[in-house]
Length: 162
Image 1 (tube, one colour):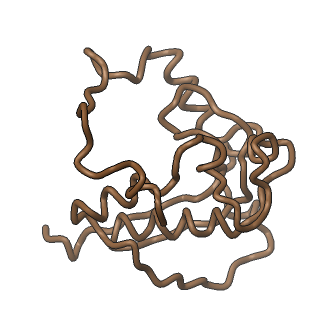
Image 2: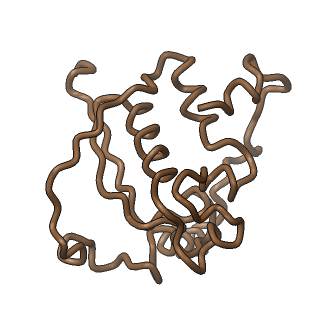
């Protein structure tokens, strides 16, 4: 197969306060950023995070409640209470990818709804459907729980910096 045949796609739409792995959802906190593509899984996440910092928050969302509404505010650091850069920094340090990227923006239509999946909306983001599945199938936690190291190899402070 080879790494040259691997790519990553991020649908940066209906971005809610928590990971889409949690049971339940909330109102999106930032406007839709679009669809990103990359051959580097770290760079694509860093690009999405950088874009989230540059965009204003959505009124009535958790971004407003946590007072991270302005361009320049780290929305997810403010909402979650820990640095939004930890995962990207960790993956970069482990050699999974690079924090560097080039953002190429294509021309887009003014009619966003023409390109949206008919099931998704601010009232029914992807997390809405995840929650329905969890109610039907049970917990998302693996048997025995999630295992963590007692002491990380790199300090949380070092991983928290952009």
